[in-house]
Length: 259
Image 1 (cartoon, rainbow, N blue to C red):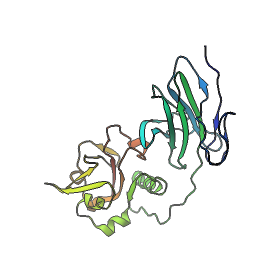
Image 2: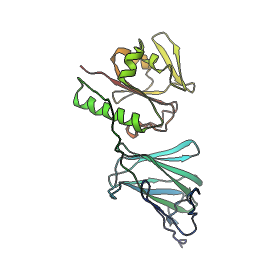
Image 3: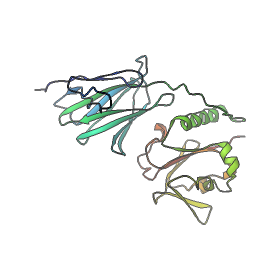
Image 4: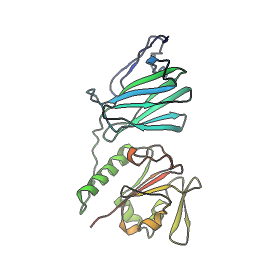
């Protein structure tokens, strides 16, 4: 038989938390794990729905399950805003949700044996303005990519962003030269240009949205051709469409000039 079902509603952003009677409510206390239901057939799981302030489901949001400082699982919401993690290790965790155009939110959850913990998270829309952005002479697709780059530069606190203005000041002969001041990145001389290492191994490089496995940054690009660079020294913060579980040594996204 199923155990007693406990319901919790989490409305993150401007909305208040509604939790069960046993959860601590005093200001400054950590919210109780958001356990909604118990099932006997699907246990050790977390599921939920991501929505905006009006309750409209948000698709393609990146949902990360973290334990401490480590991300253990990543999924994206479907067209109904739903997501699910199965076969999880037991214990406390945190759900981190991010989507372009919204503020990132985090929700604590407890993975319990033979139960499915469920969360309902409302994201607050980001209305921050991007000042001084200029993307001249680029096609519509590249405009979109650079607009997304500048939006992430404003809202994503996990990555390091080098824009066109910074590149013009640095005037890197090799693309990798622009990364020398990025914390956690090591740039060493090689036969062709430089070799880039993060935590002692090679990051995954994407050029204009195309994955380049085993490619070195200076073999794939020239400094003079680059419009912007994003550097992620861990899987945290990597945009959902560029998340790759094989990228254990970080991810570098390079956007080239057009025309």
